[in-house]
Amino acid sequence: MTKKDIARRFFEEVFNQGKLEVVDQIFAPEYVGHSSASLTGPIRGPEGIKQFVNTYRRAFPDIHFKFEDVVTAGDKVIVRWTTTGTHTGALQHIEPTGKPITVVGIGIAQIVENRIRVSHSQVDMLGIVEQLGVVPRIREQAPP
Image 1: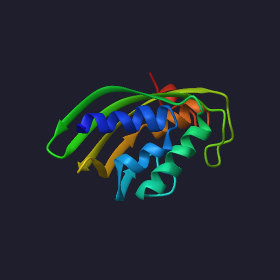
Image 2 (image 1 turned 90 degrees about the vertical axis):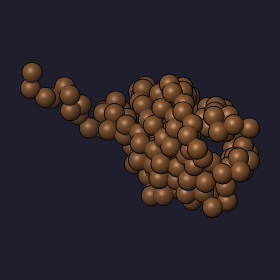
Image 3 (image 1 turned 30 degrees about the horizontal axis):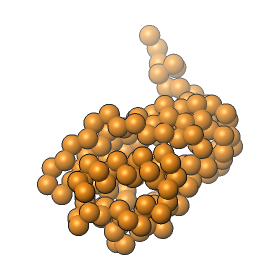
Image 4 (image 1 turned 60 degrees about the horizontal axis):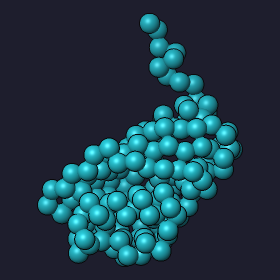
């Protein structure tokens, strides 16, 4: 299995389809994830990634990730994606708004022996809370 295949399995099967059993197949037991989308700090181990995925799948049951770019280099895979979804469940302290979101993210994962060991990702969290109406849109308030 290629590094691109492993990344696709995570986004397609785990996030888009909710197949959490795949997490145990593609994440190392010692996995640590650093993500701007994590509401609780670093994500640790397969159980941590399952909790992370469940948090977002509950808040956005129709969540969908689309790959924009995928690049591999050595033991790394780099993915740029677009995420869409409708906020119909609570996201931490944000009650459901029923509003749709479209945000972008980028991540780098180290894959060793066909398992994701470490990842770093940046997600447009400001874009999410702006689209949900939790904070005013900065760009709309900027002077012309």
